[in-house]
Image (cartoon, rainbow, N blue to C red):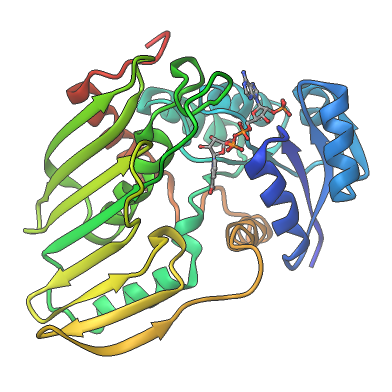
Length: 326
Ligand SMILES: NC(=O)c1ccc[n+]([C@@H]2O[C@H](COP(=O)([O-])OP(=O)(O)OC[C@H]3O[C@@H](n4cnc5c(N)ncnc54)[C@H](OP(=O)(O)O)[C@@H]3O)[C@@H](O)[C@H]2O)c1
């Protein structure tokens, strides 16, 4: 197996976790990092044992030794960074949300197709061991047809100056950062909704602090989803049908345990915990796809990413969150 050579674009907190995750993969190596400033790039490279660093994103993107760029900038920059990397002939794994809106996301998917390069949203939840177990339990008809999903993701975030989460210009807000998980969870299991109703409270900066979303799916399912940057919520999920329910223990997007309950009693517990860094599974998916010559992941296809982006557009339309330039 040929080594897949990663370049990391940006040096924030998730970039750091990802650099560590790649060291735990089969077949991947981080060969370069790029940052807006020399000092942060060099520090990051030293901390993670990365051989080359650049004090600009362009330097990284143009490095001929990089096969695939991991875009880990703030949400407002995902589109531009991804388009530049694709234009330079790189494959791209871009952090979630893929973009600010579905128009931007479609541009990115089109550009990847035109360039003949791989593109995936870094939706690491879909590669977690628990998610495969959950799908197996549903396929084995342990619940009957799924009729109900509840999922929430919330924590009280720092709202001081400099924080990206409450900054409209950086693509902040609870929906794009956190709500993308419950929406992807629900979409993955119940598909496209035919009705969507959202409410939110907005921060003085104009971003959504918290959002409640109800979806009615065409197959007869209902999802009740929420996300919050101002409340310490359970961050659990429940998937239910007439014959039982599965509790997806917190944190539901990388859950360590599932509990199958029927008629109010626990009938089986599934240990879905693992050692090490949970971002490594998505990195290994990229390795597999590149080695198989795929331009998109069968597990996180462009269609699903675009569908969830479209749902987020509609939620924002209903609650009145508009990013600069939209
Ligand atoms: N998969 C996950 O579990 C997960 C978790 C958290 C976040 N995320 C996603 O990953 C992305 C980054 O999140 P993060 O938590 O790592 O954010 P962060 O710690 O604030 O880092 C963001 C990085 O973006 C770069 N950047 C470029 N322009 C910037 C600006 N004007 N202000 C601030 N930073 C700027 C900076 O890198 P340089 O200084 O090196 O240029 C900065 O370190 C977001 O899209 C977020 O949604 C994913």
